Image 1: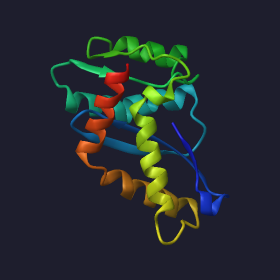
Image 2: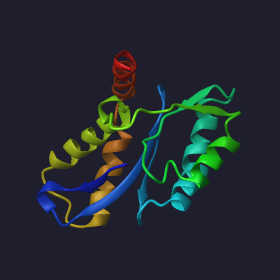
Image 3: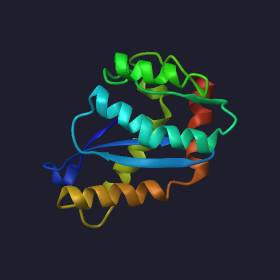
Length: 153
C-alpha cells in the first residue's frame, strides 16, 4: 500500500488501498490514518469482501496481499481464516514487490499524477487525481500485469 508523495508538491502525502481482479477494478480507498490491524480488517470488511463476493460468487477467488505487519496481525489472520471457505490466500514471498501486480498499478497512478498539467496543491486534489486515474485504468492493463506476474512466479 503506497503512501503517495507527489513529486512536484512534496508536502502532500496520502495513503491509499486498492483491489482488482483479472476482470474488474475494485475500489481505491483513501486511508486517512496509519494502517493498523483494526483499520486493515475494516478495509477487508468494507471494501475487499464485497468485491470478492461480486467477482467470485462461487467462492473460488484467490487473494494476494503484501507482507505488511497489519496484514499479518492476529486480527487480520483471524478475519482471513473466518472467510477461508470463500477464497484462498496466497502465501506471498517477502521482499518481492516485483511479483506483486498492485505495485505496478501504483506506478501507473504516480505517473498519471506526475503527467498532469497542474500538480495537486492539497490532499483533496491529490485524492481526486488518484481516484480519477484509477477509474480509467483499462481492463487489459491489469490483465497483462497479472499474466506477467504469474509467468514470473
